[in-house]
Image 1: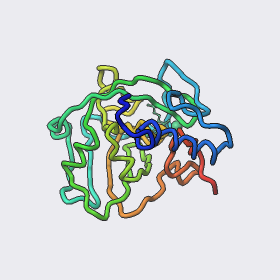
Image 2 (image 1 turned 90 degrees about the vertical axis):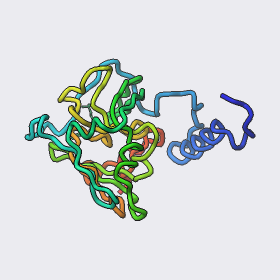
Image 3 (image 1 turned 45 degrees about the vertical axis):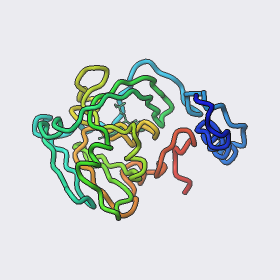
Image 4 (image 1 turned 90 degrees about the horizontal axis):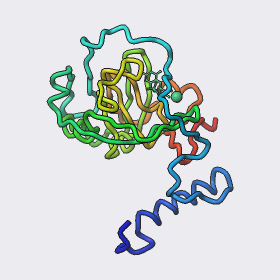
Length: 220
Ligand SMILES: Nc1nc2c(c(=O)[nH]1)N[C@H]1C(S)=C(S)[C@@H](COP(=O)(O)O)O[C@H]1N2
Ligand SMILES: [Mo]
């Protein structure tokens, strides 16, 4: 950590301040140090559990497309070839599932949402995205959460093609939110002028799902 920042402006201070606010608001407990990598209420697993609605996508992997549409200047329907013509990036991140398991150090390869956003050029009015998957699943994200630097549309995990049970050939990974936001078998990304609830969000889950703030369920 560089110490040339003023203390009140440093990333560490800002993170701790956020922790303090959230910790006080949610639990009344003293905030944990930001060196703690495991969000509150989570436990670590070494395996990678499979969780979904139990409905396998009907469309075969070879026929799948990724349709990026809505409030964008340049809507694109990607096939496997055009998707792989975008810059391919590698990232490592942790998974935090709302069912309380977390898994560290997952190696992903795919297209960053940054590069996807560059390609489709969202319009000024776009503030949210709805993700729709080939099994009928939907989930929503604010554009600001979709656009974080470590969000990535992945085709590979741990150096190997993503298995079908984990959402292959193409899924989203948004590591700073609970894993239900990371749609498997991704079919459509639609840019919207307001945040609308997806499948779990209509069924009692939180609209945002920040694991560090324990945004598991909606309040109402
Ligand atoms: N298409 C689709 N994506 C999905 C789901 C689903 O049912 N369908 N479940 C979500 C939930 S609740 C979780 S915890 C993760 C699980 O991903 P995994 O099976 O690869 O661990 O996928 C998320 N993405
Ligand atoms: Mo989940």
